[in-house]
Image 1 (tube, rainbow, N blue to C red):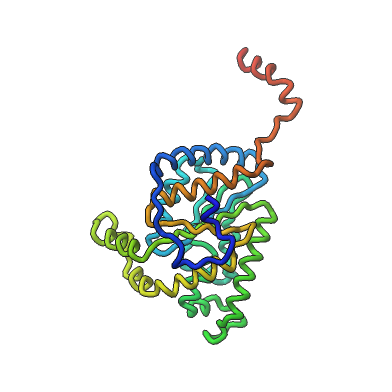
Image 2: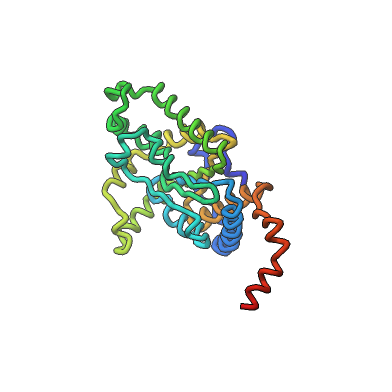
Length: 283
């Protein structure tokens, strides 16, 4: 699964979007059960948090991936945040604030469905959105130049380095969808009544900016894939395979942490287990 990890600069147009794994659904069931057991250990251990970041074009399959990959998790140990357009309150803070306060506590998993990277993706495609942040040094779109984006990428890298150094294990997955498959999925949303609610005319407007988004995604991935916070580019045209790959990567990486283990019982408690059992049995 390390083949999907970004360790050198990538070119998205050369990255595969479709891989079909035999028995992907069956394999997913197996690995997600292993993940759920590992979740219990991470919770008991209480020294690491796990942050899973999901990015991708519209219809890439983020929602269904979350549903299927985390199906066997203890619901109390995983929190999903789906970040939308910033609220009035969120705009009164720096752009990372709303993501920072949503970070998982040690022992828990947090899933960001769209992430802090929207602030170098959507805002880069639509720089006018930056004006709504009321940044003191930005008074017009002319102020949003290359130096502005360089600084923002530096801030994101610093944010991830900080949380990684303080016990957060970071996974960043880009669901790499082909333009043709997005077209098919948008058509299904229009053709199936039960899917209509997912469609927005805005999806078509954003689709026209496909090439621009691809350039921005490629730049963001190449600038921010670090050993402590790597990106994984996941072929997303086949949903079952994409889900399996994401789950397998998570399990493989987390299993390498030799220091994650359930805590030992206090010696006094351990020495008196038989006494406690006898007390309960004699009630």
